[in-house]
Length: 213
Image (tube, rainbow, N blue to C red; front, side, top):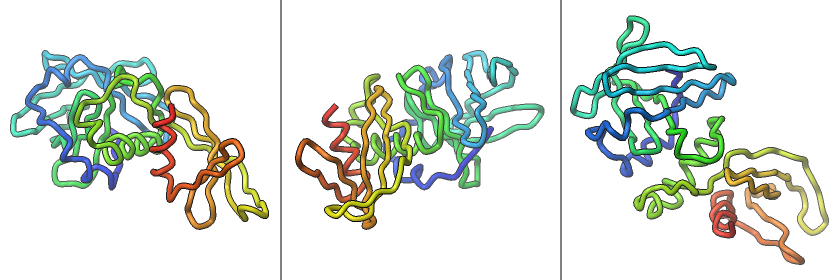
């Protein structure tokens, strides 16, 4: 499995469930996000212990077993891997390789309308839903949850009123596109009619933008 190190994982562990209810894990399409390639890998944990791994339509078979004590054993290509699920619910599964600070992050594809096809999109999603809106997450995610999936740099600008700043185009999973501007001091702003709305940082802007949708 492709793995990556994320500073976000330890911060959101408190929202996780135990893996004891493996019905939430089995027969779902768990997608591994790989920022280095355009390939899409889907893991399907079948209740009979068989693990189906589909990459670009090609399916390989492996094995998996829940060992208890929140441990998951996966056998792939004659090699065995022991994982400790640090985060688990019906939407996200973060598997930590035993004794290492590395994670394989799987997302339940059926729970989202948009595409989480980059590590940046995943981190934005985790930030907004787990860290910025913990109460919402404690009440469980809804299928219509709105989150940022792409941030595209457009250009650098300069105006007498604002000074130097950068323009970004943000795309959300519900199809909404928003232009936002970042000042050299790290603050974000948007134009709204004849006024400028200023935000302390990106997270404050995202909270505001999502509430308006």
